Length: 306
Image (cartoon, rainbow, N blue to C red; front, side, top):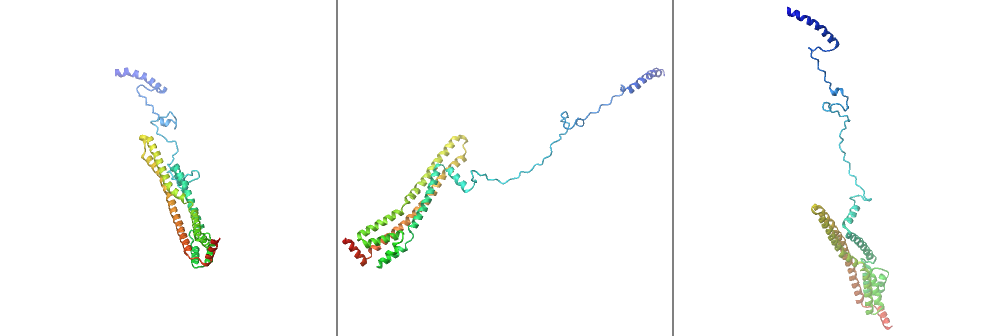
């Protein structure tokens, strides 16, 4: 009781201070202050502000979502180089000429010359009647039958090789002695054969030198390919050597492609001319072995007397 009485005045004295402290907002030392609420930086910081916490704030993708569009395969457009579409026949021919080197240009010129010679010879032989023999042999049959005037009339206006020789031989036999007539017939035959043999030597030359030019181009191409391989050294690619070799072989193939038609045409033309020559010899022999008619004998006698 004494203790309570001694403490009571103290408590009574401290109560007004506690009341005053509570009214002034100062916490009582006996009561622990409440912990200040932790402010979430994500909630306080506005979106996009540089001061926001990078670790705490979830990353927000501000860019609009773009769906991945699959690539559309467009058809390949063939480019046009110098007006020539790659892959065309003209483009392949031009590349063939470029890759072949100088030798291929010479061979190409020979191919044009070969085609021109073949067409020219065909035209000349056709105009010369190389395949026409019916009229001349019909005239010889009439001559052998003694109908000399009719025989001369049949071949007189014709321009074929056989017809010209037949007409010349009949006139020579009628107006000259046998020796002179034979010489005249041989002269006419040689002249015609020489005219028809024009151009054959050129075809023979092309058939001979075209493969040689092709081989020359191949050798030059091989030299260039091996030089490029040597310059590449350890970085040499076998594909590079293979490419140089096949390009070099183009000239050999081109030379053979020109020589084969030229040789075939030459052989055929020679066979045609040989057939004409054989027919001429046969016609001349039949004309001169046929006994001369009365009119022919009189004409020969008159010429001999003069």
